[in-house]
Amino acid sequence: MLNANGTLLSSSKRVGMNYKIFDLYKFNYAPSGNEKIGGIWKFLQRMHLIRLPQIINVIKGDMSFIGNYPVSIEDAERLTRDETAWRFLAPVGFIGLWRIKVEERDYTIQDIEYAKTNSIWVDLRILFAHFLNILPVCSIFLYYLIRTLSYIHT
Image (cartoon, rainbow, N blue to C red; front, side):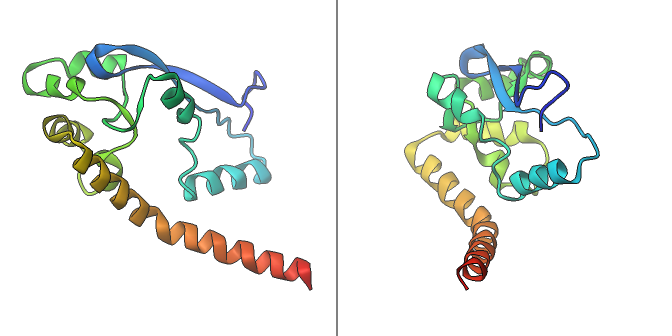
């Protein structure tokens, strides 16, 4: 997962609440043909851990745990008109409606909905739905972990 420079993390400029620009941290992925690295990458994706470096953004205060999708500067310029500007009145987040309403591909509509209805109850609903989405994956992971540990023990 290291890139050509040997770094595990990279960053890209994103636009958050009230048009604040920040560096969004993410894992570097440089396809190398290495089966082991590809397997680790697929595991991180399957376990929904691919966004783990964004916890740095949450700790720094650039992002909230729950909020709108963090858009690039180019997308933000496109979204600053009329109705779509609503999305910048709510925090950007690690998870949000865009993670649980996967049938709607346009995250802008979901971001506007979140900005207009933002409350602790909406956040709790998103959090609960997110955990329901990842529960099957986590249970499969735990099954294989327990199975592996039982082989090691015997």
